[in-house]
Length: 187
Image 1 (spheres, rainbow, N blue to C red):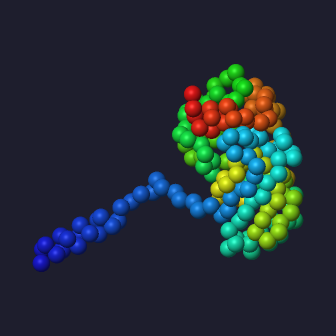
Image 2: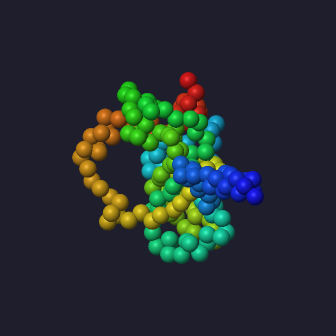
Image 3: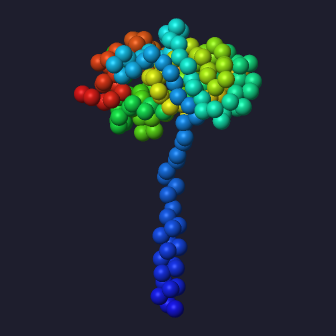
């Protein structure tokens, strides 16, 4: 009898592993764009307004799009699936400075999550036709939220000065060689 109780207790302990450091997300869709690791992509989609693409959502999320067409701009959270590794310090392309990764928009982050403000051109079924895209083809989309100018727009002289100092927008397009360094981490 004691062996059975011991076995049962061991079974319970083994099945009750606590792992609160793992967070799992399932993509809700993906980007369809002309950008690949070979072609490069805009550094920030807002800098290249004619950068078009389509977000293809899983069919089960179509009803979640109700009233989204009321908005012209949306926030899109996505997974930097091509990024390899991360560094605490980053030297953004064309910048003369090195910064902490959290002071940059580098795709090589501890949690490779991207955030883009994208223009919503139209919705047809599960397809969102968008502009100002800066994502590679087949980039997994994690979430979509409306841009709300009353709370998402903060004018800050300090941020503007920091952006100028960082040199974040010295080059509008990540070419093939910059992609290898900035996304893949190749030296």
